[in-house]
Amino acid sequence: MFSTNPFDDDKLREECGVFGVWNADVAASFVALGLHALQHRGQEAAGITSLDGAGFHSHRAQGHVAGNFDRDDIIRSLPGRTALGHVRYSTTGSSAMRNVQPLFAELADGGFAVAHNGNISNAMKLRRTLNRRGSIFQSTSDTEVIIHLVATSHQTQMLDRIVDALGQVEGAYSLLMLTEQGLIACRDPLGIRPLVMGRIGDTIIFASETVALDVIGARYEREVGPGEMILVNADGVRSFRPFAAAAPRPCIFEHVYFSRPDSVVDGISVYESRKNIGAVLAEESGIDADIIVPVPDSGVPAAIGYAQASGIPFELGIIRSHYVGRTFIQPSQEVRHLGVKLKHNANSALIKGKRIVLIDDSIVRGTTSVKIVQMMRDAGAREVHMRIASPPTRHSCFYGVDTPERAKLLAAQMDVEAMAKYINADSLAFISIEGLYRALGDQRSAEAPQRCDACFTGDYPTRLTDMTEKKTEEAGLLLKAVV
Ligand SMILES: O=P(O)(O)OC[C@H]1O[C@H](OP(=O)(O)OP(=O)(O)O)[C@H](O)[C@@H]1O
Ligand SMILES: NC(=O)CC[C@H](N)C(=O)O
Ligand code: SF4
Ligand SMILES: [Mg+2]
Image (tube, rainbow, N blue to C red):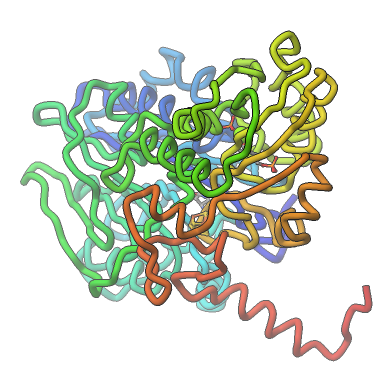
């Protein structure tokens, strides 16, 4: 369905992964492998754009990387020594093909392909202005704003046009761009979403997470720094710092849930950070019990840390089907419910008669916790305690992660005691925000937090222009809705 409000059907709730390769035989096949390793970051759609002597080639498809990009004919239709790709997640309505990335446009100085992880928090405002000036949008994605800003920039050089465009953008962006001038990687000045660089000999690779470097046998070189722009072409690898320096605010939720545990994010192993989070959680809210049971998958490392710190045995009390993907990032509530039922099953022989501590990384809507606690009770657990490896998620994310609107966040509606009742647990506790920072080796500065932790604290590191203007517009309406 097409709507006149560009973001009506998108609700700005996505998380994505990007991967790019410069200077490899059949670069697209590397990108397909890299995207496969990033599949957990977005399961709705995937796309690859390549560049060879003849021009740009693109294939975008709904669904997983496997099934679309494991086909020989598809990879052969993407020739060239350089390519970039994207895996996307979005909510219902925005799964339309026109929003699937990489987005591509023919600009005055040649083709321009872009793959974006993040979210632009003033995209609506920019879009309105661009629309009035005559820009004709092909998608409802915030990312397309970047293309129009580049296209209409008064600068003469491509890199300057990109800098000019990004200077007008607020929010989070880890971007890969492919132009005839080369492959460009760029991270927003706060470095909210991750982006790393790797290498195999003379082949340069960019990826959202280091795990994608591992699968193609590339060596991790370094992070793309917050506010850094890197151009790779026949002249080599050049780094630019076009934006005013700012204290970085990388997303803390990457450590809690999003990234794969075998990735290194912000220079820290995600597995180690999750184990540390579990250990701090045990220190803060330990309880006497017989076994520690993780809610698979993302609850597992924190549960290992909790079990090691508490001395209570770690047991697989819930078995996870490997044929069901992530439920938190499925487009509709109906599918999410179904996903949880299909995905987890109680290991009843182990659970019966035991006092259990369930460990999960987060409670968002509460769907998983309600189901899992009931499952443990049905399996005969004597007591069911729940411990959560992040603070209560009370605020929405505007930077590219699928935390829903506040009204749907369980912790925004009730306090911890009421949540415990709602999920029917004997007790419920969350790690503190200070404890979470401690687990990552930091002491949280209240004045200038070292990370974005807005979904827990409401302390957003950028302006939220679209959201603020929406509220102001609603407040100014003469006719007010009563329900
Ligand atoms: O409160 P909710 O709305 O249910 O969301 C929270 C749950 O969603 C995530 O798991 P998910 O099943 O998405 O993925 P995982 O397999 O990586 O844990 C997260 O790990 C929690 O278990
Ligand atoms: N959330 C993401 O990282 C995806 C990028 C972009 N916001 C989109 O809608 O496609
Ligand atoms: S609001 Fe939460 S999920 Fe979004 S970038 Fe900040 S910490 Fe990450
Ligand atoms: Mg989970």
